[in-house]
Image (tube, rainbow, N blue to C red):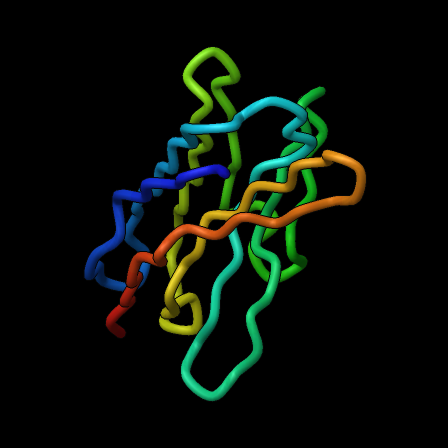
Amino acid sequence: QVQLVESGGGLVQAGGSLRLSCTASGSIVNIIAMGWYRQAPGKQRELVASITSNGGSNYADSVKGRFTISRDNAKNTVHLQMNSLKPEDTAVYFCNVKRRIIAQVDYWGQGTQVTVSS
């Protein structure tokens, strides 16, 4: 099993910044990617950004140029730097870890609320 601890959510005004962090512990071998998803009220959960073990990153079009994902492999931690935040970024943000054992297994954090006021 993999345990994920998230931190860094909160309330910020539009145009502001927040930094989310997520640290993985437990059975942390064979991790192929770490990332962040978000879910706004009444909407489906969507990918925000992800980063592979080799450092390759992927972003949702809506956050490109504003958000930056980074990873500290030694600390099994992934960060999401969010700049120029918009009210539409308001959501619960979930840390995600993808691990390949035989098949791919997804692990999720408990979620952290990000609220951007206009």
